Amino acid sequence: MFSAILVAAVITGLVRAFLIDVYFIPSGSMEPLLTEGDRVLVNKLEDTGADVRRGDVVVFDGRGSFDPITDQRSLPQRVIAGAGQWLGLAGSDTVYIKRVVGVAGDRVVCCAEDGRLRVNGRAVDEPYVFPGDVPSEQAFDVVVPDGRVWLLGDHRSVSMDSRSLLGAPGGGLVPGERIIGRAFQLVWPVDRFGPLERHDG
Image (cartoon, rainbow, N blue to C red; front, side, top):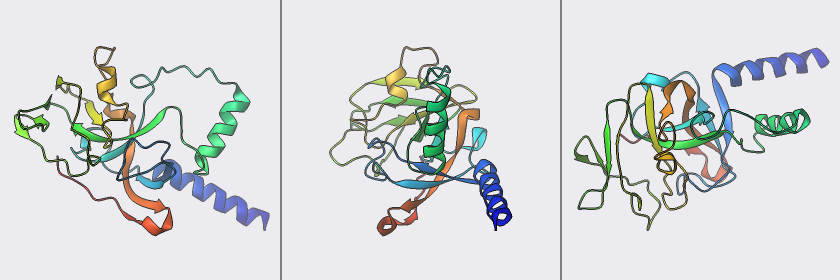
């Protein structure tokens, strides 16, 4: 009995480490698509790094871009936090979920006279933005370098995202290798179970 449980735990750990993981949504920055307390499945095999597409919702490690690399918590605190994250009961202090708005080579500008974002001179329709929010109250004009992405939350008025780090080292541009995977399925709560639709940016 114990050996069967151990094997199941090992298999689950391997699947979550290399194939598909569960991510707990810790805030309302991706509303209305995702709300605080939701759980999503993250595909670690596709759409990471250079393969990410505009419009994808991705989970990424923010250390070195959104967060400093150092972790001041004690070992017991890190173990408890890690267990909660692994069980899908808590979010992470360094892992985030946002939408890709710009990929390498893109020029992302806010905003055009019609109030929309422009990517490479083309106005972008964003049906996923929180009702009542504008694409951004903060103006920006960013050219995304190779190996980086520009990320925004769908609930623009409350999201801390790439805009929040304009002028800081790295300018809010997240390295592609920090992308953990694409969120593709909402699994909790069960009454909203379903795939996360992809949007071409």
